[in-house]
Amino acid sequence: MKMRKILYMVKKEFLQLRRDKRMVAMLFISPVVQLILLGYAASIDVKNIPLVICDLDHTKESRELIQHYLSSRYFILAGYVGKMDEIDDYLRSGKAGLALIVPKNFGRELLTRTNPQLAVIADGSDSNTGGIGLNYASIIAARYARTIIVKQAVRS
Image (tube, rainbow, N blue to C red; front, side):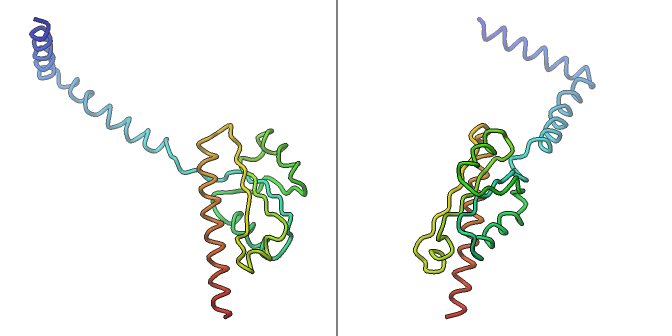
């Protein structure tokens, strides 16, 4: 019995649509316009993430790595710090979304291929931006390591 009432209602609505041409236009044009507008408004591409840098190595290699980060369109410099303790201030105050820590002996480990380590810390208050920023950071570090390996291979 209920299904019959629903079918009558559907039939009535289709008859109404045939009579009212403006309703048909609204029915199809509104969602298309919304789709176009929201498609431009919603973007998962994150750019200009504020980055605080703690370079404990101060070598040519660490400066080159930092330059790779800053020359990308993904990061902008929020500041340099001399100690790791100072990073928290940047992250907690919202001045930085990510922190890059280049440890001591990074350059030497990179040149001797003894698995150099970097630390990247994300502000967890915006997990989406933090996760995307961490992915960007790992891609940039991998590209830099690849260029160093290629340079070493050319020299040999």
